Image (cartoon, rainbow, N blue to C red; front, side):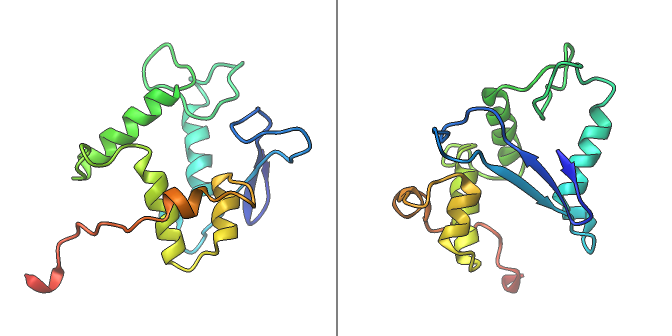
Length: 151
């Protein structure tokens, strides 16, 4: 992890789903949003790392830790359960939406906000030739927020 004045850069060195010989490993850039600290991903990362310093095992290089002793890296199943619980607590029907639905929703929302498909592919870890977004992820977003004008 390298810190710059405008961002934190994390190089992903582990072999991941789309790793291949000759293909560059992904680099995660977390920008600082100094004008809106409450939504700043870089500040959130710094805060989390600071908060977990005393419980983080010295040999643990993965980011997210479990919340109960013995503290260790959270598994993908644990992360999925936490996301689903958060969705449920947010009033989202988890019989319709899963933890993985957040990937669908975020990429579809990014596209509707005008983010290019190339940027979405790169950010999601899909190759330039990947049709995954077009075929599976670019879905309509269900708006369940109450209509404020009807109050």
